[in-house]
Image 1 (cartoon, helix red, strand yellow):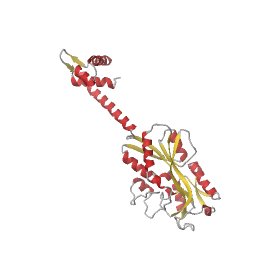
Image 2: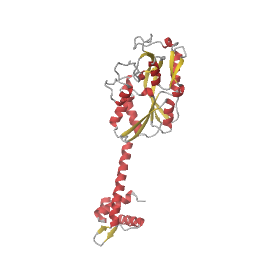
Image 3: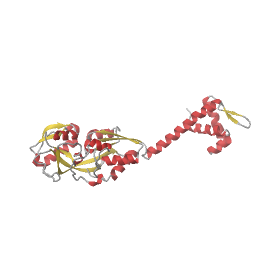
Image 4: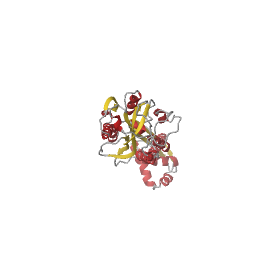
Length: 326
């Protein structure tokens, strides 16, 4: 197999047709260069140069070989450039797992800023629940997870990103809708039919919701069960019952739903592998830390009539300007 160093030596002689000038160009003495070319010819079993007393000429084999050597050197140069750019976090692929309720700010703003800063990086997003996200990061199936807090996992680093206020979602026209900006006492909904999240979908998040209700003095009657927050809200819109969601989810679905804030919070965290050298992950985390939306806090902002659906806001097609807070 031909080494890149051998190809460079050969091309220096092939382009100057003079061993002395080629050696100067390579910043080496002539005898080692001559020996390297002879060794290359023996290795290939061909003659690359016709050597006369006063001139050196490429053979036909040498001319054909030169074209391949140029490709080899160019490929090596390109590989070096790619490695340098990857080390700087300029190219590559970043795989992110996201819980449904995180598909809002500050994630949307962070993704936009990251794409602007790193346009040559391919972003791959996958919907996950908390357990799946942690396991996928640990198995190197994804590089970063945006999830709700969970028990610590060895080898993973968790960075709290945002504290979201819990809100209760009510069918429009429910007698307890009232002023949507005033906090409500959750205990007042103890006897309501509840739309609940299946525990298997996200055990830690499910348990956090259950603990919130138990602190209010009751265990909810889970009359209807969903596999995602979007489905929970869709069931509420159908008038089937009430449910709890983080405030960032209030604009995830359009429909006849009213929201009332609570004092409890739900934390959104960034999970990555601990101790590894991953430039793209570190670059994304830098943008996440600098996101203004991540610093705003968990103040509840009710949905506004005319807000574009979540799908449009993810594409950037909505007609309304995005809010700074969730």
